[in-house]
Image (tube, rainbow, N blue to C red):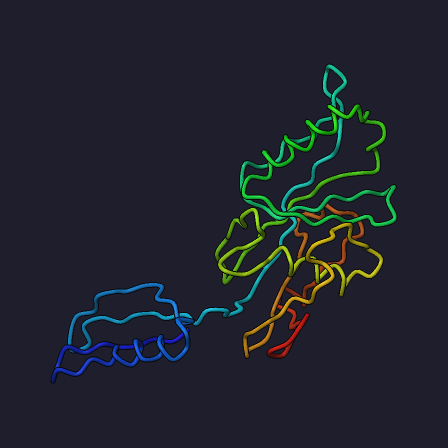
Length: 225
């Protein structure tokens, strides 16, 4: 993140440099905040270059099992959060046991899917080896809720999580058919730094991407992951 200072003295405005950069860089620089400061330097503007890859933490946050309602319908217990989340559907009976998804409202997403299962006549017993867990996304110590496209703070976190599964967990095969086969491109010169953790031990046998509480460098700079 760069800080540009703007002075009101001598008729010189250093912020003109920022406007020139916006033209040269094709508007890749995005203004993200302004504060007033007393004194000679009257205000400063934080500017973040588009495509910047900050430190990202994926945290397993909730676990949900398939069960049966009082009238024999398939349900998930407990109820999923009414929030934006990445989620993973584990299917122990399928040769491709992992599906990674995203939703701006993960509870509503699964209400629709459960409705389809029940309308198709799927019985809960067939889902005994299946479960769902959600993954919270934190970027630079700020929690972000991904949208329906998997984007959070301008980063395709759904795609990145898929690539982590492919590169770090070779026994987990994805059922996704859109993003997983393409590399995740990191365009930050400082590299790609990630943690993937399960602090409450919700998933048995989970081996996180973590370095004693520190970020793991997946890439040292620009490149595909």
